[in-house]
Length: 103
Image (cartoon, rainbow, N blue to C red):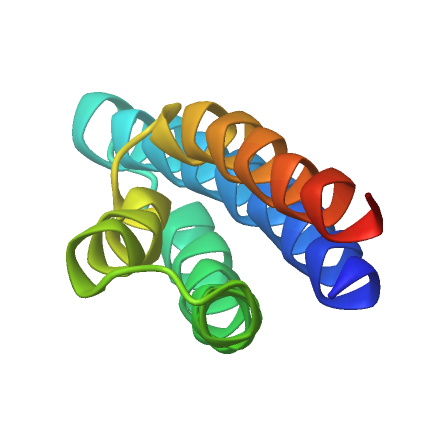
């Protein structure tokens, strides 16, 4: 479960940063009539979000999260800054599980 957590954490940070970059690109598109950045960053975020979904789902299965919590973690990559918050909560939750299993 530790390796799944590490992969999830890396993907959560990457997706969070890419989503913020996409927001900046959208401001550039609609504020300054520059659509190129949205095409590039949007496609990159879309692909990386799919990888994030796999990482989060894998961790959720291994950690035996409930459906509601798993859904919240999966959707957190679509709302700016939420992936950072949920990454911290999920990490704390999994580390507590790992510590309890070690005792």
